[in-house]
Length: 469
Image (tube, rainbow, N blue to C red; front, side, top):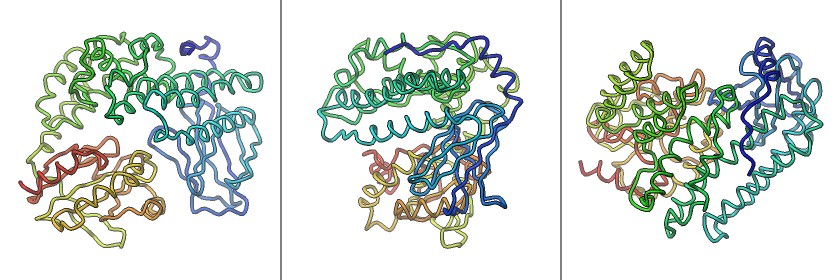
């Protein structure tokens, strides 16, 4: 695979800098199709919703983070991709079925993007791991699917703008590499009959040579995810592989050791700063015993943090002390699906498995569809176990629709978000990302503030441990 293109020309960088001042808009005409609101996904957990204006059209405006790639979500989660540069006024007429017509500024960019992402999604969805010999064959299919948009971007290079081409080239190459270092590992984890070292790509240890650092590219979501989120755990697993220890017991998520990887491998700069910030917050958010993370936090504050960030982390640490195992869980009262007020205290004397989720969260929905039913079945006759679903959706209709579509069984409550996961209950439980699971014991105390997912075998054991407490 070609190395990721990381350096854009100084000319394009200058264009990006000045373009930030010019807003961009996309206006959507759904014709006879009527929706209460239209959802727009923009890769940052802060989805936008628009209601139809006086002439029946849905309008979104962007004043920052331009250029930007977005996805419009229609009925049955049908997706249309669009790309916006500063100053563009893009129009889209669609029924989310047969008709997809772009007009106005930026037509070629959005048309090319939507075409190749549609083809990619079709190819990706046809991958059937159950019919393949193992993770390496599955990854070959994933890599082949990832190559489709890369090839189609090159084929259409003459039709699109330089800004679009450079953005997408970095984005698509970063996604390809991210899947090689992350999806391959996850597949190896799931294929328990294979040794980890045998299931990973033969060149797994050499993939670090394909990652280069460029602070100016952090605005591209796929590149940001690669270098800030996925690369540190890859470096940790690479060291285990080279030491011959990858097949031994180790944590899939190990933020404390990932911190050491960032310090060891990342050059000084904005990327390292962002990776450190995500990492240290992840440690504080998910540590079963937050005091174990204090030495790392102190090191980070001493070497890397400014005064404001140091204060923020110390405040966060003190909040997390109150959410440790054995502490009383934060109290809350929320409206149920039936419109009734439900309090956590209503379940005193029972073990409560809380699932914090939202309709826009794909991993949340995946767990609900495939993991939750199996977990529920193991406790179907046990009245001392409650499965409590707390949605952080900002839209009531989206919340109800997801429950109905996925046939989610349990007690459903809504804590409406201002955006992303910005809700009082998320702040009370110190939740920065979802899905997130918490187990509350019969006394209303926290038994596990970062419990395993429904699909994991150890989840049943955790709940049974809480029942015996």
